Length: 91
Image (cartoon, rainbow, N blue to C red; front, top):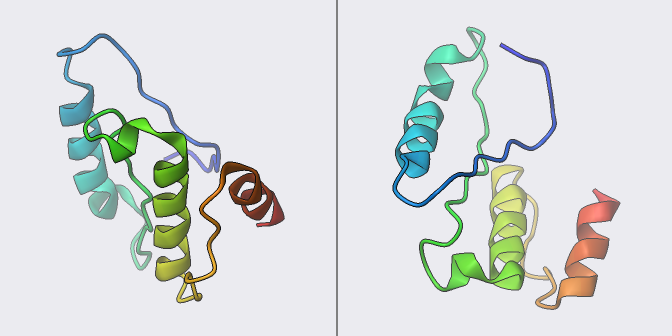
């Protein structure tokens, strides 16, 4: 398994199986991870709902999930694009 910390983007034509492939890979992460570790996944299927097609709600939900996973307060996450980008860059 790669030690990369880079984001992974999967793209392709509609109906080619992207969602199925990504869902299966995510479900297998626990099996593929080194023994004694527990992966934390931040997974989004973009374009499947109105909120996932808009950048601000998507970034907000990603920030909320990250804060939740690391037991940090997430009530102060901004709801505007520029402050969201600044928050991401501060991490």
